[in-house]
Image 1 (tube, rainbow, N blue to C red):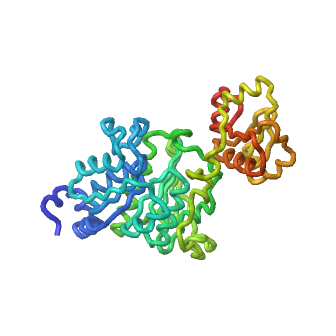
Image 2 (cartoon, one colour):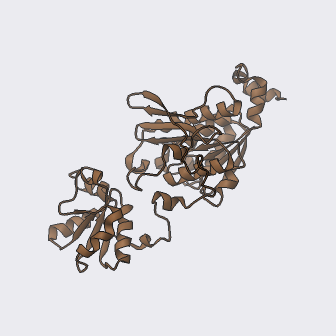
Image 3 (cartoon, rainbow, N blue to C red):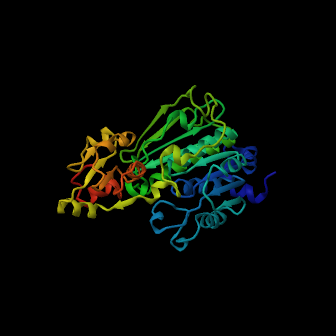
Length: 376
């Protein structure tokens, strides 16, 4: 039975026929794991706690930075430099002391994901990297837990509910990740501060619907929002029978998601690659040094513009360029953001080239340094 304090707190929610006292008790007995308490996790956590979800797990290993505060509303100025899970705990306890909070001041990894995901009823994916999104998805499929997903970029957002018994998973929508530096992070590409608020509330709404067993969750549907023009759209997403996670079920264990997504991992050889800043490269070119420029982006990217004198060798073909290079001259590898170029440089070094560099920040940094003279 609900206590008098709980009836008073949730009075407006209890008056809904779809909720009532039985529904509120269901929420009280439910558990939700929030992967990330940043832009998306902040509003989702606030409203799930306010609604009376009995147990909330918070997974995040980041600390509060002043640049977070325009969108990560769980945290305040006084929380700068604090662990985000601690800041989130204090705010959520103030909002609703009846909710049990469990803190995990760590990153979600292939080693801990299955144990964490399997211990909660619903998973809210507020991750900001593709590697973590695939990790959350695969852990949810293997553990049999629904994945309430959302992602944002600049003025656009999308949300869906994946990994239910009869619905698609994230891999059905995105079978493979984009090139590692093709989609900039919020730190590089920017984001309107209210956008994660909008999408985080969609996540909280879908989570409550799943826990209460009401309405029509976004299973098999992708909600997309263009906030700049306030144009929502919902498109169908079907389960892929060939999906290795939820289709053929050939995926039976968690993988190396940094390698799968092409993101740099500490300890890999490309950590030792020398970098050249845009200013340094500009000086070399101005001085007429015999530098060889290798643009390792894809053709659709190089078609937008290249640094004059650069040769186009997509990353997958960069070894084919070795016989045509003068290994006595410095080689500078270039990509969109500096990730693929580091891989290309490491590949060339392993093939015997000695003076190899990666352009730090890639074409994005080069264009910014040169007042956007080269489009990105």
